[in-house]
Amino acid sequence: MNPDLLTQARKKNEKTTRKTLSAYFLSVSILIIFIIQLFPLKPLFADDNRGSIPRKYIDTVAVSAIVEDYNSDRVLWEKNSDKAMYPASITKIMTAIIVLEEAENLEETIRISENARGRNFSSINFRVNDKITVGDLLKAALVSSNNNATIALAEHISGSEKEFVKLMNRKAKEIGALNTNFENTNGLDSENPGHRSTAKDLVMIAKYCMANEKFREIVSLKEARIYLSGKEIIIQNTNSLLDGDFIKGIKTGYTNNAGFCLITYSKKEDVELLCTVLGSSLYGRNYDTLRLLDWVYDNYRYEKIISKEEPVSTAYAGNDFSNASFDLFPKKDFTLLLNRAEDRIFFDFDIDRNIKFPVLKDKSYGKMTVFLNGSRLEEFDLCSRSEMKSPEIRISHYESSYGEIVKLLLIFTLSFYFSAFTFIIIKNLIRLKSN
Image (cartoon, rainbow, N blue to C red; front, side, top):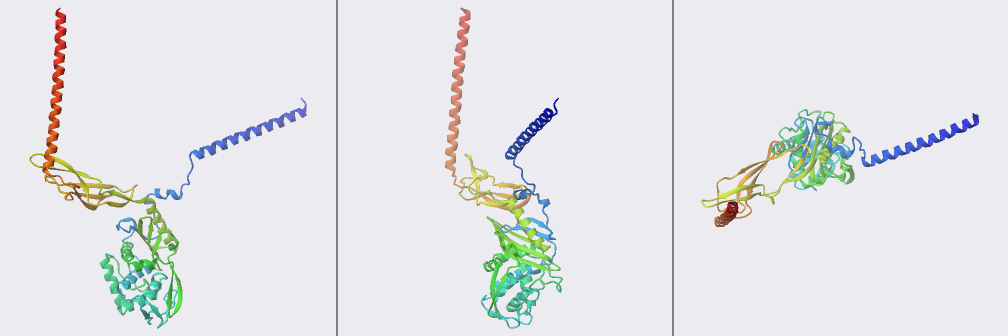
């Protein structure tokens, strides 16, 4: 065969093969794209999968941490929350709330004493006899975490820091923070080894503080202006998380002993949370806080589990002549922050027996107890929504009895005619057979 013809045939065959392979790969590509459109793939760690992370896989860099529902005090997540820890500058929230409760005038100007002068690991240098208002000292303490500001405030309220610390410990016990002991006003602990608290106690203290409108206002500031001896100073908040939309306060802390600490108040939609992390790292405290808050917001929702407009049980009333049932309603709604994947709600009913007529409107005829994961939450009175008097029940009973009698008479009549008709047919058949 002619070599040129062989070469031409080979080239033609290769060209045909390339076209066939191109068509094949194009078809496969189209098929893959079609399948992906039908069944879109999601990344393993996509943001919308955060809510599916089980509780046991959530952990923190922090040694101790806790997240609580602000409105119910329910603990939603915790790690070593009862462990005694150094609170560092979170201490200042207690100093501030006592000043807000005890000071007569936040605009009053005071002079810096010898004890309160200097920097003391703070950004602002106080000099003896510097003039500053009580309100600006609060901002310096809570916003820029100035250590000497708390000493000046303590001396203004109690005459000395030592006497003021007594107020701090007394207030802690009143709030219920029984595992807390303060030894100074600013949280510096190198010379105060007994200056301790717990994540759970600090959440209690924070909630108490956040109920004060002025306190809430100050800890939410990203920056503030204060005046020291007439000179304007702009201070920045040490809490960088305030740049987020849902973080509303409250205080950072750090010492060598305490590590990096943060207590946070957040609000997203209608869910309010308090989160404390203690003994974390520089970047860990923000990471821990956001991870815990995001996990709660992804997993928990407020749900109305009891509606005062819907009956939840039935009771029975009666007398010597009749009896009747009536619906029982809870006196109020009950809404709870729930994790649908974990939380289990149970109800226990204790309904009154031997209820006599008349049934009175809004009178309690039983109780309903709500249990969450085996723990008792709250008890509700169950009431009738309308009156039910004895004569009404007798009429209803009579009408019901009358209806039963009519029904029996109708059945008897139909049975009688059916029997008679059957008898006549059988009789005629016998007569015809006889004939």
